[in-house]
Length: 172
Image (cartoon, rainbow, N blue to C red; front, side):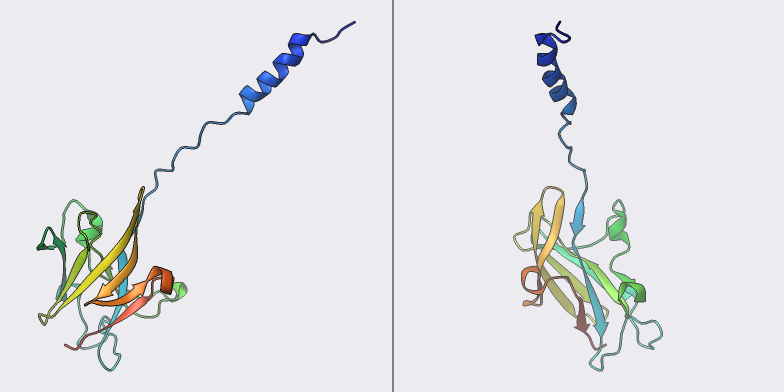
């Protein structure tokens, strides 16, 4: 006496295959914008000019940031984009995160339309620092790979690894 017919044995693998299939993974829809750089602004004596306890400290309003877009300098401010409204931003020390000094957080020009995205830091004394960057653009990701300050390469992801807090020496 046959307990199971041939159809049953054929049907079992088909059912297993149908129920073992998973839907293809959908992209996470995540976005990674790593387009900021941190600076510690000091004078020749290595005094932290961002520290509010210093008599001649800098305020965020003592600096303006502009991008070179289509050959024109455009001041960075867009009331529709929250993260640009408050930049440049001075960030307080975070000892738990290993940051023991005040830092200036600068959003860099990351326009794909520019051959060399350029950002200008215009200081209260009229001096201007030029930042030029190379980025990696892929999918939903924009990551800074190299950064030049006034023509000098100050950081290369391949060579230097993790982004540092770069000391920027200014005398006002």
